[in-house]
Amino acid sequence: MTIDWVSIVGTIGACASVASFTPQAWKIIRERSTKGLSLAMFALTTLAFAAWTTFGVLKGEWTLVIPNAICLCFALFILGMIALPQRKTEEVAEAIDPVE
Image (tube, rainbow, N blue to C red; front, side, top):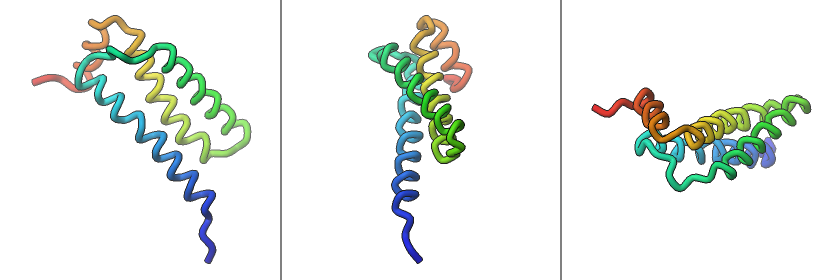
């Protein structure tokens, strides 16, 4: 049996990419603020994940599509929260995680 190092490295990269957005999204929800986050950076990040997802679909490479589509969703959420007025950001965060 041989070890498929390419698949292992790809899986690690995919998991790390997806996991990297979770803490940022949760921090926005918990703190109800996007202060300090760059709209331009998340716009470019969203574009990058949209392009990688599209590339994966066109190539039929579902190992590219799935993690990049998940990251695209996170990036879109964060981008949307940054673009919203503070009051709306707080409302969305409250709807997701109500403060008791």
